Length: 347
Image 1 (tube, rainbow, N blue to C red):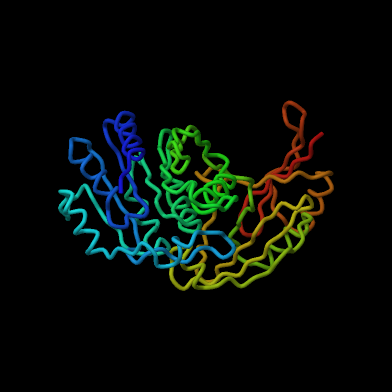
Image 2: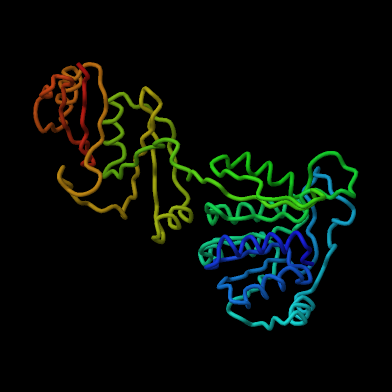
């Protein structure tokens, strides 16, 4: 049910977001707090309310995580029909485009497709009791969080429990936030028993790339290109015949057959040669087309590398040239598959 502290938090949410947004509730049970939120929305607050629950009771808790007996598997079961009936008794009639109940275990209901439809998340009511359910929902809402989003935890710490450690929602949030340090929270408010707590998102630094993992090059003849890159000093890291099913899915083309060779440069940076067999397109690129133009490699002695590759029949655009600022000596050649390679010696 919606207690005094919960109602006070919702009142604050209305003040902060008078123009509304999306509200998510995890752990609907019989629908007391869901009904309270729905009635707030009916009173001229333009929000979308979505409630998630198994409607089969609590799932089994993660092994090794403490929980009270009242949070054992199957407890707090409220069948969907009973919940809808309870919500109706509070004056909320479903269906209504402003309100939605999503039945099912979180592993099945918290999908990417569902998340894509959620915009402007302003408030999250977490009343799932357990550690594992809290982790699942936090992972689900992570891309939806924005500055100002408020998250209410109904079971942060229950004074009647004698367990000294952290458990359930509290433990889950602390572990989850440690793995997501780019999202900063502050304590918005807490009830007078330290049972329930509300946190506010105050800053989000979006995760960026960690590094350049590798460069992939589609080749005409795998062995011919391999010999070329070995002349430059690359060594074979791994050969593989990729899974047809996997490659077809990520390339969005059925029946793709792909053989690859991963190569390591002396500094352990990686390049991948890809041979698609009959599916590769035989097109010649110029240096001036839109898209990836060339790959640049640093060499110790450009003249020596230039002469050695020239003897092997590798085509060069010119002889090595010194840059106008005399910082480097540079030359371009073309690999067997057509990739333009820039070789650079820092002077």
